[in-house]
Image 1 (cartoon, protein in one colour):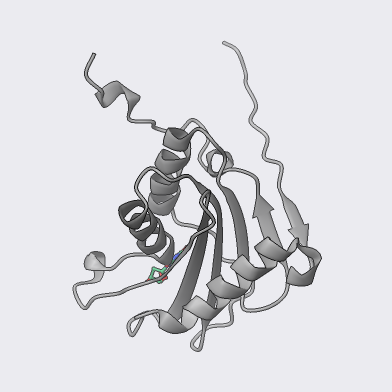
Image 2: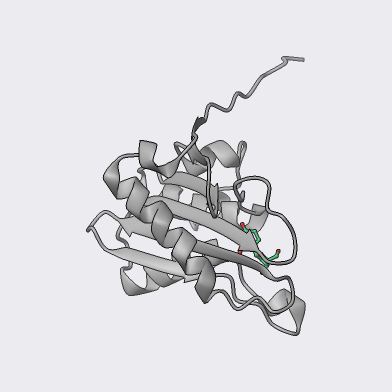
Length: 163
Ligand code: THU
């Protein structure tokens, strides 16, 4: 048996103002987008903003539904919108933020497994990293260099392609 090890390297800044201007802007947009969430059930408001290779920015927010599983996270709302408005254009960076008026959000929001899978497939297809900037309404920003880092040993769907 061979023991293998996976390591995750990521960065943090204490304040959004320590980031380059384009990333600052993206994080601020994600923070603003929390206000567009439709989250009457969880009262957890999430915003996402994606910048594409062509310079366009597409945003999203979580959209819930009384039939709970029918809702969608902010990250997937933004990524699906980006891919349908600009098909095939690489998604370079995604910022995600969250706030709540029901609970105290202590840490930067971190994407759920389903969102990691969806974002990973776009990253894998575009053959270029999609950087992630995770935050809450204020304070530190966690920087993940590529989605793959959040989904080690990921399922690529390659096995599903016809030969
Ligand atoms: N949610 C997101 O939109 N993104 C995340 O990264 C975590 C969770 C949403 C789903 C649901 O509407 C609410 O937050 C509570 O889980």
